[in-house]
Image 1 (cartoon, rainbow, N blue to C red):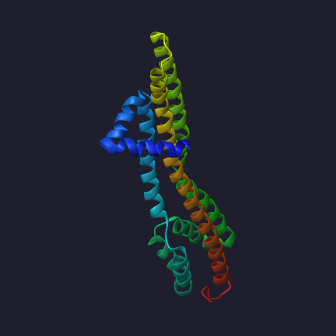
Image 2 (cartoon, rainbow, N blue to C red):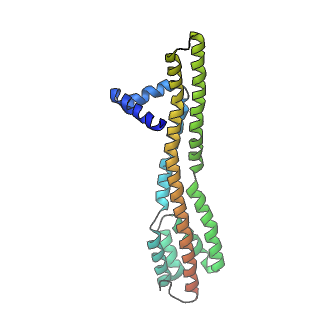
Image 3 (spheres, rainbow, N blue to C red):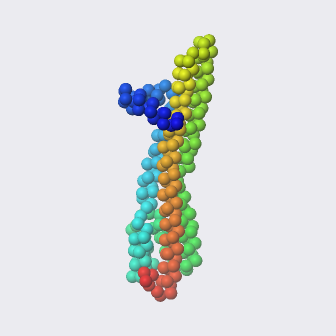
Length: 230
């Protein structure tokens, strides 16, 4: 209910001076703690852009790539398959390349290389998420801290006025709660992106694991003289 009431208040007040002016006015009213909350949003969105770029580079059409590698193994062996991996960007191609480079040493060596490099690629995919998680945790805490500080100021105003006026109480509390509101909004925005990245990374990891199993099977078939695309 409070969430919907906030949006109703936003549209009512935004109609008077525009949403940008409303946000600026409320930001100023919120006081000092609005600045670190804004910093959490700006830095968090910077990491969001960074993760969008890195995950876009890491993603490929895994099924098509696997078919190309199998065809290369059949036509030119491991060397030809390595050329396909070197020309392809993405985490799956990097893991395949690590395994194929050790293929001459045996299937076990190739499998160990795939597992080891798979862990490295997973760490690369998750890089930066810890900072995003930190901002998600800090923003509401800063908001609550700002609210406590605002409540203290509101009660100090009541003490100085020596009168519990509804205007003093309501106005002070309203301003104090602004930091909590903005802190929660920042955390919600960043949490949505965080969950999206986790889901996308999980999908990439599953693709790496499944395709790596198929690569090992293809290498076994190649060693036995069978066609990998049969």
